[in-house]
Amino acid sequence: MGYMLEIQNIHKTFNKGTINEKVALNGVNLNLNPGDFVTIIGGNGAGKSTTLNAIAGVWAVDEGKIIVDGTDITRLSEHKRAVYLGRVFQDPMTGTAATMSIEENMAIAARRGERRGLGWGISRKEREDYREQLRELDLGLEDRLSSKVGLLSGGQRQAITLLMAALKKPKLLLLDEHTAALDPKTAAKVLDISDKIIVEHSLTAMMVTHNMRDAIAHGNRLIMMHEGRVIYDVAGEEKKKLHVSDLLAKFEEASGSEFANDRMMLS
Image (tube, rainbow, N blue to C red; front, side, top):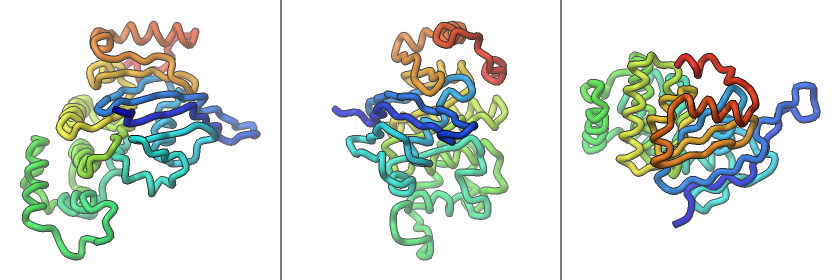
């Protein structure tokens, strides 16, 4: 059984040779097994979101390789590699088309990579499928298929974006602080939905979070990044036993400094 994701020694420096030069990724190595759900934590500028952007192809890496399920995608355009990936961003407005209905949004996701548009409509069977998936969210959306997404709350939009991201069973689901903009209660609900969708579709997933408790509570593996590389990687039983204090100690040991991130401490 091969890896679902192999990140081999990736480097990325922004604004090279200028006064604003910033080394964002400094030799990241990471392998994910099929079905791994990895949470990623670290201070500001540690390289968490930059790693997800590298996988998604937002820009080219300076060196190194990114391999998804045996396919080297390092040189593929963002558009070409999108077929392998599902992604949910921090901003609930990003993943859905506000002026379109829930069912239209889901149909677009379901037809991704196909040539046909929505011109021929949504079949009764599709509608039933969507209704069933929405019912499982337990947000009362199954009776609102024709509602415009722009009228929904942030939590409802993120839940729908998650469904859409999973519809085509991507090789890899990328969650980039996807609950950070939500209130705590809604964030917890969206995280539970994320867990459920990942298990149900047997997805391999990576979740960047600022919340150490969430990072410990979700997924089977946790990695900590610092200054553009992975400094800690823990899985299974050992991960389950972690406390926030362990992670803070780990960070201080690796960085030689206090964890200076109020957002993470307070959440």
